[in-house]
Image 1 (cartoon, one colour):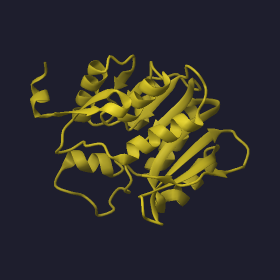
Image 2 (cartoon, helix red, strand yellow; image 1 turned 60 degrees about the vertical axis):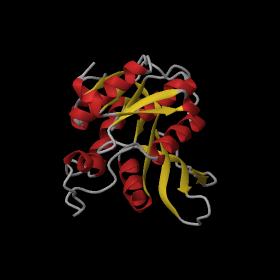
Image 3 (cartoon, helix red, strand yellow; image 1 turned 90 degrees about the horizontal axis):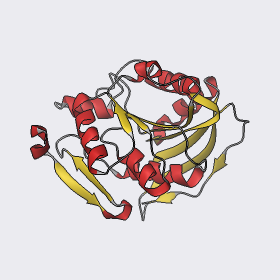
Length: 229
């Protein structure tokens, strides 16, 4: 067993039958990951898709999709080397059929064939680069702050290149970035098709939003009832 595992906490996610290693100092998953996984499974119905999970962190979204809907043989893409090491352990302990890539978002087309994917999920960093939100923890910053200029443009343009016609990109993001998502999506011929806001029980305000984009789809947006957590 790798030495670094002694610093990790093993979480039992009983609802999904998963065990997930995480480092409480850096990479604790939060409710947005579960919301993204559930939103994807509720709105994507193709069996045995070619599937990539971007900004995968320690793999919770892809592992839920595999466990609950059989979306195995996925590729999980994570830029942070330490998170990637934890991700590999999570694939092992859950006997996953998925694999992982420790690469930059701008490199993934070197590893995956163009127009080969049916499904992409992504829980990206929410803050823009140089937004003044840096902490003293480089690992946390990499998970929360975009790592280069024009991050969303690259995300959407690369996703368009990798998806099959009518393939889907599912994303969770901060609600204040919604206009950016729609602009970049339509600019790159990924049309927003399904939208759902996330709000806490007892609250009337939403802070997070879930969006399904579909490659080369027509212009019609379905807004679902809020997801209350």
